[in-house]
Amino acid sequence: MSNSETIVRRAPLIRGEDFETGEHLVVEVGGGKEHDDFFDQLKEIKKAAGIEDDKLKVNTGEDERVANIKTNIVRGHQQIWPFIPNGKEIAIVGGGWTLESTFEELRELYWRGVEIVACNNAASWLLERNIKPSAYMMLDARPDNHRFVEKPIKNCKYFLASQCDPSVFDACEGRDVYIWHTATDGTEAEKKVLDDYYLGNWVSVPGSSTIGFRSVCMLRILGYEHMHLFGIDSCYSHDGKEHHAYHQKENEEEETIPFGLGGRKFYVSAWQLSQALDFATLSKMYGNVFHLNVHGDGLIAHIVKTGFLAGKPTVEEDQAAA
Image (tube, rainbow, N blue to C red; front, side):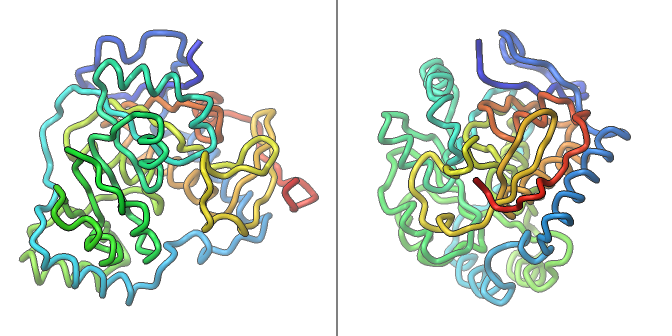
């Protein structure tokens, strides 16, 4: 039995013949009162846990992002641009702890020709297991992230956000690099820089504050409707100890909170809760234009499995993760 859950989107789109076969639980989402109630429940968790909004935002300041954008856009890389739907499947691989338990599913997709998109340091994890990504994506603007791209991947397309640190672009010099932009509402300074340079001819990629669900939106712009998600969990492992399938120093000291949802107990950090909130918003705003198959046993898969109709989440009295 496949360890995954499928979201069937309400849309008159061509579906892959075998995308919805197998023993996946089929759930329809994308709006309605149940969605709003669930979103409110997640916000209550945030409030009860004392997580401030500024902890759910990007991890670099606007001035730094604007400076990065000014440096990177003049490098001459081709921007992404919308494509018509292509009917193909694609797999997005994040770094979540469920990667190990879903590796056989991922490898099966790879062997039958499904293209693999690696996010951040998941690329190294894949290469160590003889899976070569067709594409690589990065959103994070922190300088240390250049280490994720130090090892070149042959015939791989690199999709780097214009807000990424210039050292990331430097490390990818000579590779097949495409630039994309995250500027949306509330980022007027960034939008002005892009408008001035591109004369208004640029595409804003909507979505999450993390690369996982931002990749979903970008790949839909590039013509992909059918997407498998691996390692995009939005939670720690069941014992509250593991946040990634590999060591990642940036997350070693972060705090987590436990909460109950649909008969399960989860441990989440601020950014993971933010990603879950982003997923709820994404499904409501854009849920009619793509199909997702969420692999693993993390919070996002559980949200799908319960159909946004789980019992009201409650924050445990003890806020310290086990």
